Length: 58
Image 1 (cartoon, helix red, strand yellow):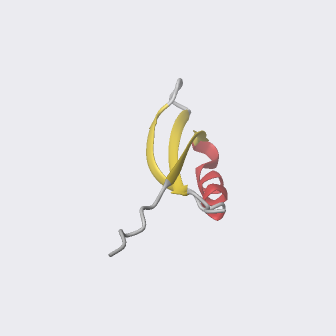
Image 2: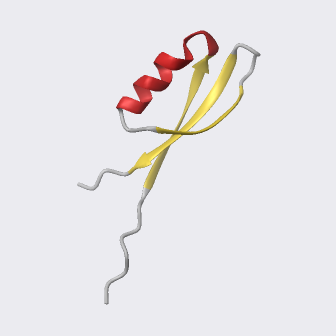
């Protein structure tokens, strides 16, 4: 009996400027990144976005 495959993840955090949020998120989404969380950045105009995606098996 074999074990089920375990998904391995890679993670990324990136600045998210509130004046261009949709374009930034769309770009990361096209690259396979899934938005996990958004937290406040150093100033009210800046946010930090956390993303994950499955590790590509080579």
